[in-house]
Image (cartoon, rainbow, N blue to C red; front, side, top):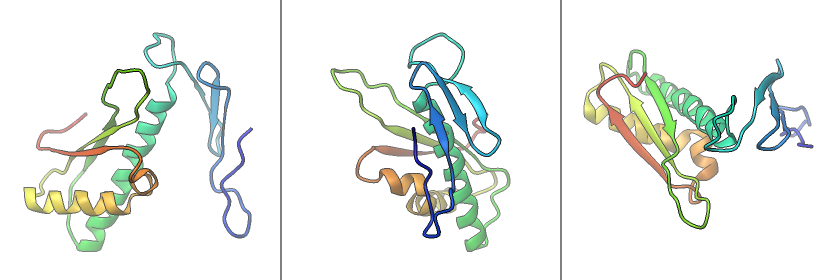
Length: 143
């Protein structure tokens, strides 16, 4: 059973429960039910690393938009995608490649915003020094 992350006044912020890689994950206030599956499985659902990547991309995009607002930069409709590069050996390694598209933003400004967002994103800060993260700017839309 997982314990909720709490604030100093002990109110839950986020909760999730899981039945393991071949179970079900129940996420959030609306109790979204996500079937879990092992990586490389063809069964319906998502593996935990995919859920991590989705959360990371979403969180990073929010940090990017916050930094852009703070700096007075208009970024149009930015996109972020997190990928887990494949690495095969005797051990499992988690790494992330964040791909970012900032329409209407020059390269220098885009690079500055991406690095500032990476410095403030809660996911980036949580895994700093433990998980390699690549940052990749794209001129063309990601989706």
